[in-house]
Structure formats: structure tokens, C-alpha cells
Length: 230
Image 1 (cartoon, rainbow, N blue to C red):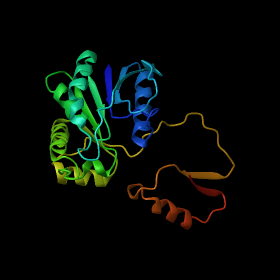
Image 2: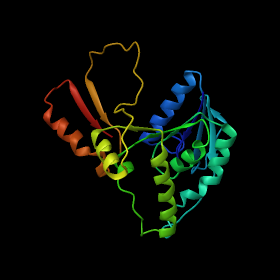
Image 3: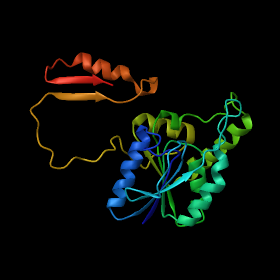
């Protein structure tokens, strides 16, 4: 099966939680014998190989915006569609909601191709509005492609109940499946008698809810458990 991961960033050049999970998914699909392609915007100055760990990489040159007009992501449409036409995937997987999901559905509607939208955070399911701090024209066309993609996505993956509620409330859509953990299960893991260490590895933006981690650390009174904040 041909699978395209269609996300704006690739973990090794622009690391983030969603990008990490997308890379794990891509690598697992390669292991299972699929032909995997990854389309992303190369916003770094690093040279990108044609293949990385069995994944075919298709970097796009960044289209620059600015604080006045915003980010005209809709301008990537022609390049993304051209790549999809060349690859001819059977499945397109999208995360970090942006106009790319609209491009995927535009391509897939007339072909034997399914589009999966994996919701990454509450920001993905908030009501879509014109951002007047940017150019209303740029915001309008970005939103147009996002709404198109949400409307025509074949499968929607959520991570928590709040996603389900807002997805239905703001877009009239229901999830296909809920996955709240997205990491491979370690096999043949030996038991350890050493101290249990629980790490916080993330930024401290309000959406990450650091206070819950701190509250948990405060409530657990166990000398064998250590909470570590990076």
C-alpha cells in the first residue's frame, strides 16, 4: 500500500509531539511492508535526503509570510497536488490541522484514496474564524481549504472526549476512533527494581496543563517515585 504522511513539519528538522508520533507511524508502516512518503515544508537549512529510515521524503520550499499578511499556506496547493499525482497514494494521513487537509481531500475525491485526519490538540477542533490580525484574504483562503478538508475527510481520529464534543459542536462531525496513546509497546522489557522516574518533556504553554503534572507530583507520597521536569 502507498501511504502519504502530509504534515507541515518533519520531526528531525522541526521536532514536536505530533511530528514525533507521525514519524513513529511512518516507520511502523515501513516495517509492515508499505511504501511510505512524507510531504512537508523544509523550514530548516538542513539538507534533506531522498529516503530516511525507509521513508521517502518530499520537502517543499517554504513560502514566506510576515506579521502583516500571515502565512499563506493555501499557496502550497499546486505543489502538494503535483506530488500526490506523482505518488498516487491509497491513503493520506494528516496532522496539525492546516490547509494541507483540504489539498488531500481535493486530490482524493476523484480517486481511490482515503484521507485520515488525526486531531492533535484542542486547537484543531476550535471554531474556525477569520484572523483579522493577519490579512483577511490570506485567512479566508486558508480557512476555506481547512473547512473543505474537515468536511470530506474519510476517517477522523481523536485523542480525548473534549475533542469529540468540540468536533461535533463546531463541525457537525463524529470521530471514527479514539486513540489517546500513540507509542509502540516495548517488547521483552525487563523489570527494574530501581526508582521509578516520571519525566515531563514538553513546553509550558497553558494547553499542555503543566499544573496537572505538578499537582500529581505533590499528591503522590512515595519515595520510590521521582518526578522530573525538563
